[in-house]
Amino acid sequence: MATVAQWIEGARPRTLPMAAAPVIVGSAAAFDLEAFDPTRALLALLIALLFQIGVNYANDYSDGIRGTDDVRVGPIRLTASGVASPKSVKFAAFGCFGLALLAGLALIILSQTWPLLLVGAGCVIAAWGYTGGSNPYGYRGLGEVFVFLFFGIVATMGTTYTQALQVSWASFVGAVGTGLIATALLMANNVRDIPTDREVGKITLAVRLGDEAARISYVMMLAVAILLPLVLVNDHPWILLVLLLAPVCLMPSWVMLKGKKRKDLIPVLKQTGIINLCFAVAFSLGLALTRLM
Image (cartoon, rainbow, N blue to C red; front, side, top):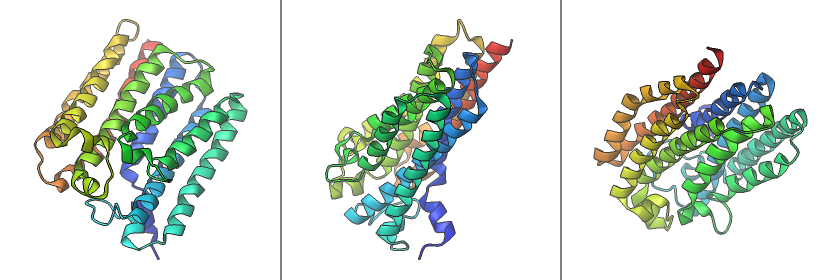
């Protein structure tokens, strides 16, 4: 039976900044629209965190029963390692999804944004379908597309919409930025796993691109994410704060380009998650300071 520490490790805490970042950016965009609501922001954060943990457990279960995780470098895999039964891991995943949907229902009731019920259902389907089901899209090279959409566009602009009942150019730019960094994190993870994924038939985008091109794409995604907010500089001059992240991106980018051993890429995952969180804070400060000054 898995210990509490193993369950926490299996939830992959280093990925949680990826869930928090779009909520921070979306809330800042709502503040820029003079519509920030702390209660709705906290509910959106709870939803994002629960979905992220649920996705991590769902991937652990699905990859574990397929044998994809039999030889892995990185955090413990609860199912593949045998420390937890597949049934319990699957239950944990859907438990998180269920709690996320309850929090989502509360947010929809508060904001009266009933069409978002369909978005919530889509989130569960996308979360499970990444590695679950008979034809998981994560095994077809579409994982990055869905991460960009759901952890970038949907999470960020959905957060803004539930508070302001509208979206803005700033929320879209922030959504693209945080979505690209989240996608870069997944790319780093999949570059690390190219040899084992190829052997078991998991054809991720990294496998399709090949090792060198996949590593370059990581750097390009970070670069676009940091530079894109400059389109807002005329109306939001403090958005230049985002450029302070450029030096922080140098180390993980260098490791991605030059690191040859699979274990060399493990710290990049944590560093990319921190970059996403720092991006969210810098972007949000840029919007807030412009509004306040």
